[in-house]
Amino acid sequence: MSGPLISIEGIARRYGGPAIFEDLWLGIDRGEFVCVIGHSGCGKTTVLNILAGLDKPSDGVVVVDGKAIDGPALDRAVIFQGHALFPWLTVLGNVAYAVGARHPDWSRAKIRAHALDYIRLVGLTGAEGKRPSELSGGMKQRVGIARALSLEPKMLLMDEPFSALDALTRGTLQDEVRRLCHGTGQTVFMITHDVDEAIYLADRIVLMTNGPGALIAETVVNPLPRDRDRLNVHRHPDYYALRNHLIDFLVTRSRSFKDEIAGLAWDRRHPPAVRPSATPFVHP
Image (cartoon, rainbow, N blue to C red; front, top):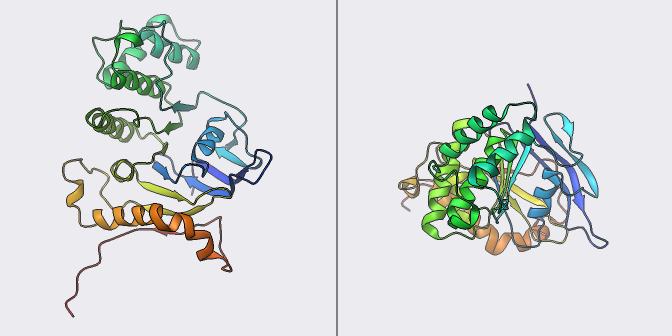
């Protein structure tokens, strides 16, 4: 049996003082959509930067597809809160630039065709010749998504990519990301502060305690069906049990968790996998 595509093995990060987080262990399977939730300061973005190769752990290692990460690589694509597009390039130019970097041996015609395929997938056909200044915030993020997916990466890393968008645009892009990632079997590691976003998108939700010295308290298996849809997700019998579990962690347990496990034989390598479900009401 093959192991996880991504293996986070005992990583910690320090910047001259107490560790932001320490001894983190997490495996992510191929094609899995994982969301990470935790309060500001617990090191979520630092973990993402380490996965991207933009930062290095003080301890431990991250292994992707059997190889330890040692700097950035095109098999890991990142989508940040900001679109990070080249302002002097068109939509097509921004996506084609990434494709050309990934496939330097391809002809210009093949690069263009590949880029156009992903521009079409995110619904931007007709906007290929526009520059970022001519696009709305949602359209810019679509370009960023097209550019990242056009790399056909082993791992897609997203750091609150929809947080700056209005609610309607955010919902539309969440739908697009679900469709694209599940349709292509993309492996995703995503940071979010939005509980409902995590419930809608994730197969598994990782809960981090507060920093400094943050740790993974548990991983929550999403009990909702993978083909869930936005209009009916709240009707699933386990929806509110899951939502209440996540909110309870953020409001209460993220702060008190370390006290809860004090003196216990806590195995950080295997934090509990929880599957919240509705408890049937029983008449007394």
